Length: 150
Image 1: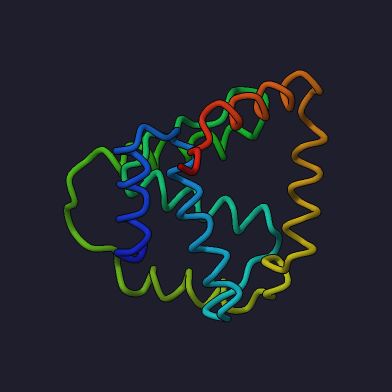
Image 2 (image 1 turned 60 degrees about the horizontal axis):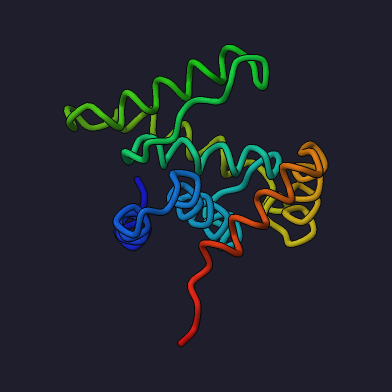
């Protein structure tokens, strides 16, 4: 369950008209903080990001599942499931036994996935997958939508 502070930040981003990935970024940030605080670990930086995105979808962020061919069918199915969960009203709480099992499994993992060097490495490899034109367009959009200081 995401923290109240994270939900408020994501809601504020949505009200400001920011993209779904920006809203989801708040949940990813929370996940990284939890790993750094030692609440649990992750096998890789990718897993830490995936957990954050899953939390975002379940909290109602309108983040579409990844495109066909970019990830496995199982990952796309899980993302679609998370989105559906985020749209449906809350019903019964998650089983305690199941929650505990997930937490225990994550606690057995290391915390180096959230280190600065690991995050930097992940960002670099993700950027390398994008074309020069995509990176340029992204930078131009950032410059256009950046809040100016008065």
